[in-house]
Amino acid sequence: MAASAIGVLRATVVGSALVAFSAGAARAQVPVPGSEFSEISACLCLQQSISTLAAEMNAKKRALDAVTRQLAALDAQLAQERPLINVNNPDAVARYKALLEQHDATYRRSIGPVHADAVQATARYNAAVNEFNSRCVNPNRPLNWALAPEAQSRLMCPPLR
Image (cartoon, rainbow, N blue to C red):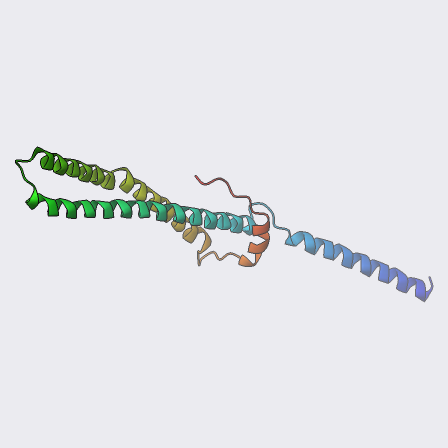
C-alpha cells in the first residue's frame, strides 16, 4: 500500500473510533430508570406536592383562625350582654340564648371539623417535608442536581395522595 493510502486508512479508522466513542459517551449521559435521574424526578415531584400541601395547610389554618376570631368576638359579645340582660324580658332572654347557641355552635366547629382539617393538613405537609428532607437532602447520599433541568422537562408526577 502506498503511504497516502495508509494515511487515509488510519484517518478512517481513527475517525470511526471517535464517532463510536462519541455515540457511546452520548448514550452514557442518557439517564436510565431507577438511576439518580429518577431520584431527582421523585424529589421534584415531592417539591410540587409540598407546594400544594402548603397551600392547603395555609387555607385550613386561615379557616381555623377565622373561626377562632369569630369565637373570640362572640365571647366578648356574651360578656358584654350578660350583665345587661333583663331576665324579666322574654325577648331579651331569647336573644341572649340565641347568641349563646351561636357561640356554642362556633365553639364545636373550632374544636371539631375545622380544627381536625387544619391538623390533618399540617400533618400531610410535615410528612411530605420530612420525606423530601430524608430522601432529597441527605448529606450521606448527595444528588447531582445538575440533572434537575432535564428531569423537570420530562417530569410526570403521580397525583397527590
